[in-house]
Length: 205
Image 1 (cartoon, rainbow, N blue to C red):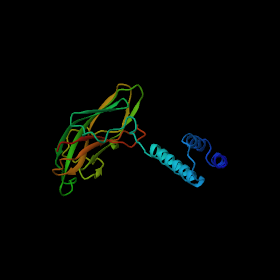
Image 2 (cartoon, one colour):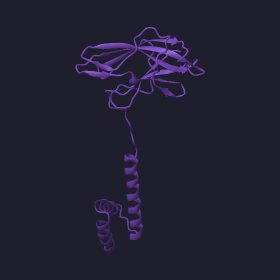
Image 3 (cartoon, one colour):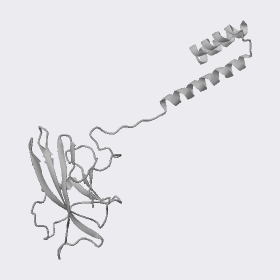
Image 4 (tube, rainbow, N blue to C red):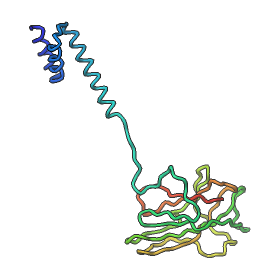
C-alpha cells in the first residue's frame, strides 16, 4: 500500500487525472510492480497521446476563392460566354490579320483580331477596359494588345468605358501570337475584381 500511495502522489502532481485512471486500472489488475516501471509506462502513454493529437490536427486543407475560375477546367472556346459577378464576356471571333509596311509582326509571329462582347447583367455600373484582355502563348508568355495596322478596316477597336445596368459593348483587339501556336489563349482579368484570377478562352488557331 505504501508503494501505491507514493505512486498516486507522483502521478497526481505530474500528469493529473490520466495517471490516476492508470493507477486505478493497475489496482484492478492487482499489478504490483516497481514505481519506475509504472512511470515509464505513463510517459509512454502520454507520448502516444501527443502523437495521436498531432496526427489528427497536423493536416492542412485548401479551397479556392469564391467566383474564381477553376484552373483544372479546359479553356472556353470561340463563341463561348464567361460570366463572373454579373458581367459576361463572349469571345465572338478570331481572325488572322496581315501587317503593313509600318506595323509588322515579329519574325515567326502573326497578327490576330479577336472580337469580344461584354454585358453588364447586374444592377451596378461596371468598368471595362481593353487592358483586361491579354494573349497568352502555350509556353506562358503573356502580351498586351497591339496598335492596329492599316490593314485593319473594321474601325471597331475596343475602348475603355463604363456599362450601366443591362448595358453592353463589343469591340476588337489586335494581338501578336506565334505562328501555329495551337495552345494560344485569350485571358480576361476583369478590373472590377479584387482577385488576380484570369478567365480563359482557347483561340483555336
